[in-house]
Image (cartoon, rainbow, N blue to C red; front, side):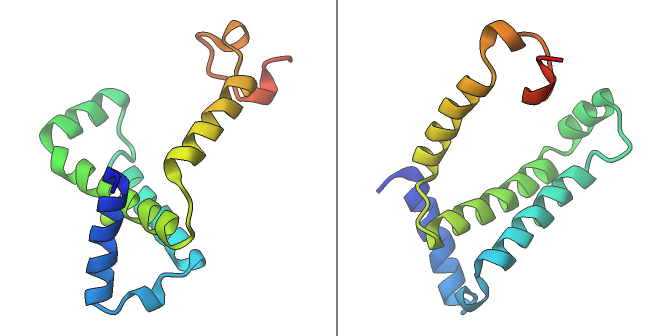
Length: 117
Ligand SMILES: [Mg+2]
């Protein structure tokens, strides 16, 4: 069992013990993923980069908890919808390599369709 599969089993057992799997459909899990991402974002709202770094130093567990919530939903969606996240990420990185050639984008933060303008 991979590390991701071990974590997915942990989440699955947690869910089954509470009879929550009935609520784990693609729509609601995706809403959960987005909601938790926004809870992470909320921690940094109205803060400068420096204030965000200081916040993380002062409250690392809050950031880690929200990241874990995001990870929970990501793993749960992948588990229930049979998505191999490792393979999916590798494929996406190959796409990103083609979309963002180093010689065109190095040191720039534009969107892929803004480089030729
Ligand atoms: Mg949360």
